[in-house]
Length: 142
Image (cartoon, rainbow, N blue to C red):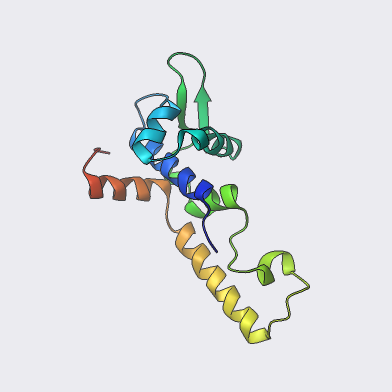
């Protein structure tokens, strides 16, 4: 499994919104600037996060983006799947691929890898990542 740029940028944008929660809607340009997300992609990333229900937007001069649900309720497995699709380390496990010719032991190993990845991602909330980022940078106090 390889996290796409879209997935990486989406997580960065969510962390930024969580760290700035309470400030009101945040313009996409501010998020892009702070998180090193290309201006040409921030709109697409935020649109995907909005469609997934993680982010809301407000139009107008004072508009921008904000979290639609509390950061404690957003698990990283949900975010990765919303942005990048199913979490799978290989095509053999995706949709019970009939073309997979691996041995039972090989398939079992990949299922274990898949389960461990999901366990790690589902055990991390957006709030966890936002707090860890604050501790590492000292930029915000949550």
